[in-house]
Image 1: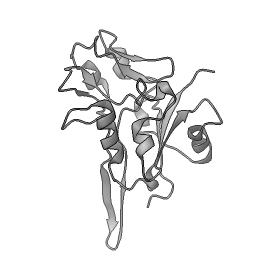
Image 2: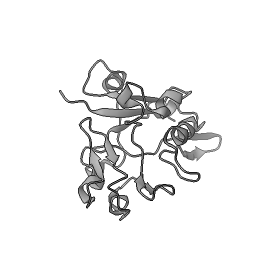
Image 3: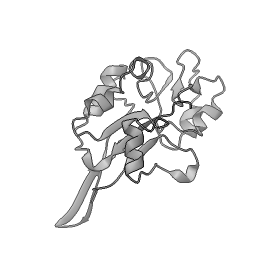
Length: 186
């Protein structure tokens, strides 16, 4: 069976430290003021004194049915053999069709390269070498997991089997490979 890499976000474990954002910026040499991933605060919600606040990682959702890939006129946006949506910087002409097509606002024009940029699950520099993405490796709260969900022995597949997970914006039919577990979130 083919690999299908996915990221699992256990929202209740995220402390909002932004270590994932910083690790991503350094690992991928993302220009100042630009981000492949970010973790904004959601809330506060509720009424005093019963308030809640949580953090929800935002990045490319690595869609199985990726609209960004479909609209790219140069095929710079593509899915590799492991289901990871990537951008070939040398083929990108900066037309921004993919940015318009992405319902997650997960892409930006890289100020250094002029090409569209986004989360790559650190595929080329880490995952391809048997390591986890930089954000997962640095997550101090243990909120992030990554792996091949077609392998029932992977930690990512085990989390999906154990907990009810959700995807962002399911109504768009993009079939994301980033899953959110809200168990424990108030």
